[in-house]
Length: 310
Image (cartoon, rainbow, N blue to C red; front, side, top):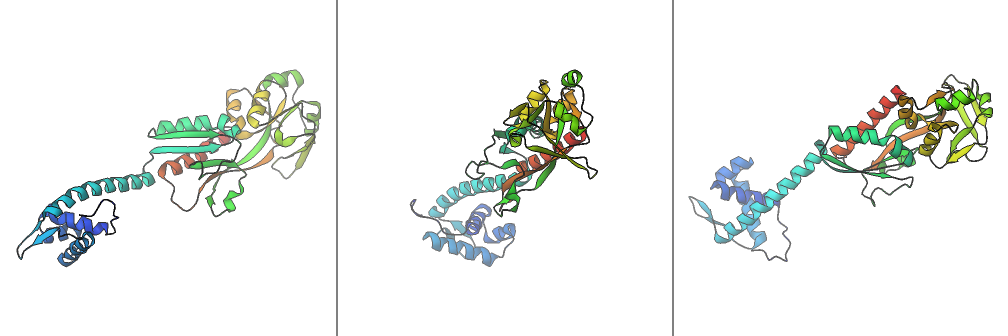
């Protein structure tokens, strides 16, 4: 037998051929089961014996039978082949069946305001998939953090050969306010009217930076106003706007649930800013498991439904 400290360098197909001969009693039946010729099976067994340095089969003109060493090797080889077949089946299933663990990262804005509904509806459909949701504005390294999918705004990684990064959605940033705020201050009728209102901006709009908007008809406009309140992320801008602190400049997807609930209403709905694209970033060079592909597609469809509802 091969010593435990040695490495087996033989072919698994040779091991399977030997086990088939022992299981079925003859080289002829083993060849039929494996779809090979008798000569091919005999050569495989002989090659395996040379690799191991022992005689596995006792051969006579009329029959073959396993030697003592052959029976011992057969018992262990069958166990190992069963484990390997199970591992191969698991790997194949990962490409076709949605199961296992999924690690996803996204920004604070999307993680807090958009992802809960999408994760809940995905889990309801695919309960065999468990999910880690890493919510952070830090761009985590996918390989180092074992991340399957990163949902990133305006990612340039789509041009990097180390990643695949299909676009999930094109984002627009609109103006929204709580009904109570508009009742107290009045609704602006033009972009110029915004100068008389409290504006709530994210950290990307520090100081008196202009907010550029378009109306979808080719007209461009902008507002230059020092915000009444600034926040580090759109999730906080949303909460401040819902609380009636002013008119918020918020991605439509982030504001979608508040619009459905009636907590916010659009302000100057014809005007919005381009907010870039949302990409689904994953490591390139391998086929995505079913759980990753299905979650990515679920997010794409969910975001499209949110945009339509908004």
